[in-house]
Length: 246
Image (cartoon, rainbow, N blue to C red; front, side, top):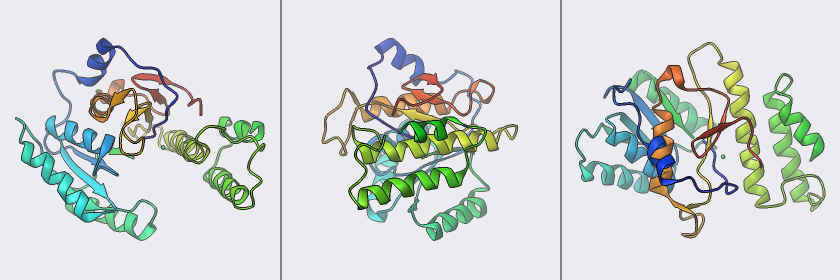
């Protein structure tokens, strides 16, 4: 799931509506939710919320000590109905780490149910879903890195605000749509969620809402009944839209 800063605040009523899943949950204590980068901020808040709802939650992080501490903090809170909480080290930028984690999930847990992971020519390429490929997305990122490296990126149509962050989210959103199309018909939903300008370490404590508020809304979306959960969408807070405005 991705995040950006181009959003307006939702009302308290909207937050509550998005925060609480249906009274008759579709999940059980055997339902596995993996939250990457969950040792702090929105990831930690989301993992906590899912565990409070009774799911079996796996937190991941690159730093093992911080990850273990985050998992312990959730367990120590001991809210009623708390599901199992585990930590497993994962570096999503390391193919070997990803492969080892995937094998562990398959062998130890039997799979997972929920996974929470952010120019005119460029715009046309990203919006042409019928022709979009992983190679296109990788090529876009490689082109951006090359132009940053040689100092020519300005004036080439890249996002003007938080450029590096925005490009990473463009890639994430594009890949999410690609994956959603690829998995259509297989009962797998792939969406992006934008919590907006949220108070976390990355924003140095600035923002319009807290990580806990964002975590509640993200959990509410993830726990929608499967029949009601769309795929290939970009959620601006709790509102599904087709594309990010990055």
